[in-house]
Length: 254
Image 1: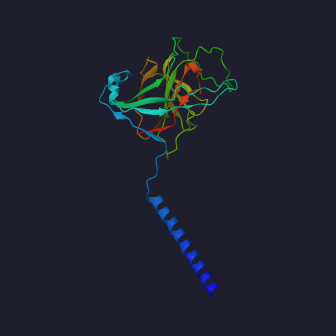
Image 2 (image 1 turned 135 degrees about the horizontal axis):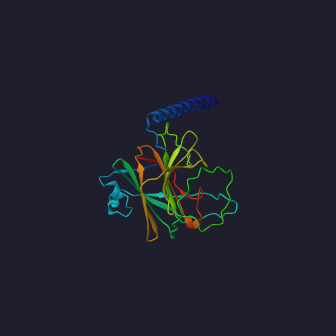
Image 3 (image 1 turned 45 degrees about the vertical axis):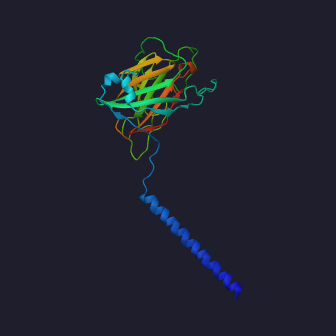
């Protein structure tokens, strides 16, 4: 009799556990359907400014203090060549402000850089895109200059899928606003790694090196909210060029 009671008690306990577990799963599934999903990535707010765009193109303008600043961590690309040593993270972050003024998106970027790597050199020739499958190291190691860029998709993204950080994807092109301390500003486009091309277009931009830091202001076309943007920095003294650089993740523009 005692053995039968024990068996019955064990069977009832098992049934109760199964029912409890099934109820818990059902509750979790119901909660998952009603809860608001987390937004992927990080957000970056922009401020509507009554300040003239021309004023904000001065990266040292005092009006920038009225715009919220975002400190964004920078990542370092791994070595691209067998002969190059890993580069230290000399520039750990960049401070970014975004202002919407006169139908444009004005971007201020400030980052610490111990060396001002710039020079006055001849204008870049209007040469066609060079599609060599391999690249070789140059011996002119004194010809690398500080640079920065802002990248965003050319078209609104669908279903929350963003292009690759490696210059977009086929069918998902990106626009790149690129500034070089020696050559100035140039707008580029790309549809994947190794496809970057110059458009022949420039954009308003001003950069000032002061007290061990670059202060840069760029005038971009108006980028709608919800679009991702990414930032990149090249340090000339570290022989940065092409894919050898500092970069951020995609950040959703609010």
